[in-house]
Length: 73
Image 1: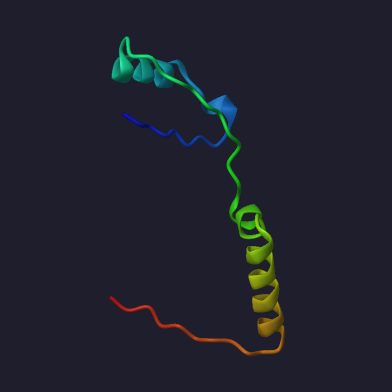
Image 2: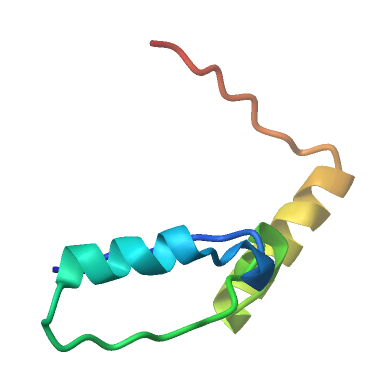
């Protein structure tokens, strides 16, 4: 079983979360890893390719070369 908990901050870790983990995994061996989540901006510039694409899009927008997309059902 694999479970991911997304929390706003470490301050949101509660006894209830720990009890849920204990209940779900019982006496099975587990690993707990903690990583800091990237916000949307950090994710967009997380790789050189993404940074170049974002920079190109910003330059395109500055020139007024925009693409209108209509979202329909």
